[in-house]
Image (cartoon, helix red, strand yellow):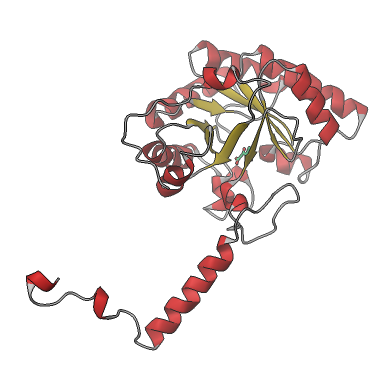
Length: 278
Ligand code: KIV
């Protein structure tokens, strides 16, 4: 059942999620729109307005198509629909990597214009100074290590992490850097299971897995993947909890049949000339 986002409800804070390290798993999903935020809010602890919105809703090939304006517009829609979940908005590629000043200004703009609870940045050692500056300015940060979709062009594809000793050492360094910089949690994406589990055991902040390990402190999926609305390739790490693409396609087929047969609209959908019958 949908919640009423306008009802007085206490929102789950980043600090509350931090305190759940090692406890009940933290339930996270992405959300990009008002109705989906309304529907998910009663069931999850955290809603991420992921930069995956560029691919999922806007049809870009990678998340590099996301812009600040796009993230803010979807962040505002999700905030209107979510009353209790902690809402995190992704910082798009280009908004934080080059300098601490740019990172801080971008994070402040996202929070000011959406009212979200936290921002998320991709990277570890390379952006630890940006995370520390944003946290010092009073904005909670979620980290993101392992497979970094914003680096897909630089890396020449989506490469699973943690398959060599050097890469495992780099992942450990990234995890420690994100924690030391003050992040309240960290997403671990596309990382071999034992490495993700080891990092979860090593850190004092909650880890949120996606293509990682059930031993992470929580899990996240892209909502369109989870409800079977993804029309292109469904990644291996996804479990589809519904098949909405079939439902949408069947509904469109039935509607088209009705319209062509003049079976829709029916009498019950029409307005009569007299007011009392309408
Ligand atoms: O953009 C996104 O949806 C994400 C999740 C996959 C973690 O970053």
